[in-house]
Structure formats: structure tokens, C-alpha cells
Image 1 (cartoon, rainbow, N blue to C red):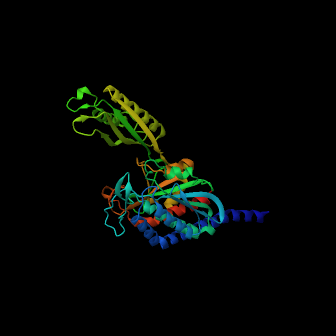
Image 2: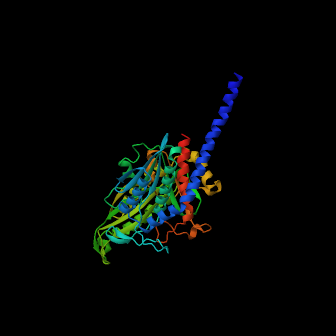
Image 3: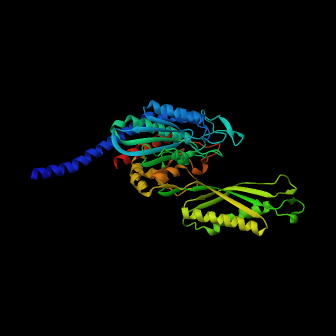
Length: 434
């Protein structure tokens, strides 16, 4: 009996140790492979950067992705949500289904960064001839996920579970009148067959130093809703405003009034919120007060209850201001992307992984931001974790870093290898802890 007891104690100690050594060996192998393919990842990124395509028009981009995933021997699904591509990797050992997601569309921006691989592409957007640029770093997202797919496929005989590599179109929003993006991917079954248990995503950040990671548990990015306010007055000659009701003046009062929704009616100690008018249009010439004026804008919120209240406040403020001037206001609010919510428990469990890969000193707790991301739709379906990866030159001030969605947007490629490692390590650690 004594010998059996000693054997039990020995096994209780040595088996976890062996398992831990296996995990450490896997992680070392990932890091070595990431070093080996770094240049390849950068080459992919530069190719996608040079030839960007707009939302729901990512035809050549999708072909390149699908062709590469097929060359790895993965099961490949195409034409999801128009141009989406999904690669499925079934590992040797049973385990959870892990979704890793990258977005693939560019923006209608003319690039002016002095790069050998700068975009010269053009297209048509809303009836206008435009330049096309990866001005939000989606080219880096594609390349990093392709790198992760290569590494994980190479190691599949040692891994657990199933990986779904999701290359999603139209994150920036489908063209008017079209459906697209994460929401359509989900409608068309991307979370099913096999059913995804958890989803991870990375986004490059031009204002965060390369080889650093930023995260926030809970609401990390804002819900983004679109509003249209149509003010109807009474048309008259510009020389006789008293003979009509001026919808332009009323619109100006509404713009000022709705700002007080944020500054005077919203509890900003709870969460941040923003209302911005991005477009106003009314009239045809200088001496005619028109009958109608239209405003279009965005509402950004980080809390569902605050979102509902701000919608109600916007309707009331606009209609009552218009009514006070003898005009009418029609308010239409379109629900857009929901809050990007990082599951708190998942974030807590995966934080040691981030510390291990990047170094604890390089993992930064972030405040919520009022930008929006349609990764939020996946995180409504299953626990999700969305992270920001540094893309700014080391030593540069964030103040001097060109913002996303601008012609000068720039990514320092030295941090892409870390992004590949993060995606791989998140998947492996999660699968082996289930």
C-alpha cells in the first residue's frame, strides 16, 4: 500500500510537469516558426497594401487568400458574405473550435505615403472616382492571420481542437443598399459547422508603439449608430424670411441643442458618448430659403442603457426645437455596430498569454475608445477578445503618428511578427485549458 501511495504522489507531480513541458515546447516552436516566416508575412502585407479593394469588392484579395489557404491543405469556404473566405484546420486532438478573424477591405482614400508598395489603385465609390488605400491596416491583419494559419497548420499533429481562420470583407461598412461584413458572415453561417466556441481578433494601431499590445475588458469600442434628421419648414424668398420658416436656421439650432445631450443630459462618469453631425445639406441658391434641410450624423455609446436614452433624447430635442420655430423634424436612427465587448472572464484567463508573448511591460490596459468595429457581432455570439497591436515606430510620439483613415496612415512592420505569435498563442493556450 505504501508503494502505491508513493507512486500516486509521483504521478500527481510529474504528469502536470510533463504537460507543462509539452506546452512550453509548443510555444518555443511557434516563436521559432514566427521568426522564420516574418519576411514572408511582410511580403504578403506589402502585396495586399499595394492592391487594395473596397468593401464587398475584395475579389482579387479573396482569391489570393483562398489560394494560399488551399495550398496549406485546409478546408476552404469562399463567397461568404460576397467575398469572405474561411479556412478550417482540424487538429489531431479533440478540443474547442477557435475563431481567428481578420478584415480585408480598404478605404476610398488616396495614399500619399512615400513607399515602394504604395497603392495606386482607383475605384468608384458613391458615384465618384476615388483612390483606394489600406488606410486602417487591414492589409496587416490579413498577413498576420495567414502567418498564423501557416504555423498552426504546420503543428496540427500536436494541437487540440479546430481553428477557423475568418477573412471578413466590408468591415468598413457595405455600400449603401448592400449587406455585408460580420453581420452577414454570421447570417450565412460562419459561426456554425463546426460551431465556434470562442473568437479572437487583432487590430493594428498607428498610435501605439510597435511590439506593444493594448486591451480592455468589457466595453472596449463603441456602438456606432447613424441618424438622419430632416427639418421641414416653409420656402420663401431670401429677402423675406418672415414669410416662411427657415429650416437651415432651425437645423443650426438643433445641432447646438443636441450637443447638450452629451454635455448636460448624459452621465459621463459612467461611460463616454459622442454625437456628431457629419453632413448637412439644404437649399439650391443664395436668395431662396428652402423648404427642407437634412442632417446626417453618428452616435457613439459604450453602454446599452445610455444608448437607448441618448436615442430618446435626440428625438425629443430635434422635434421640440423644430416645433418651437414652427417647423417639423423627422428623426430616423439606424442601429449600426454594437459595443465591442471583451468577455471579462476570457480576458482574465488570456492575460497571462499576452504577458508571456509580449512581456508584461508591453501589455497595456486601455480606456474605451469611441471608434467602432464589427468584430462586435461575433462577440455577441460567443465569448470574444479583441486586442490592439502597436504599429507606430518605436520612440515616436502618438501625437505625431498619422491617424487611421487618412492619406498619411503608416504601419511599422516590425510588430507584425508579434501579431502572428499572439494569434497562435491565444489559440493554443485556450485549447489546452479547456
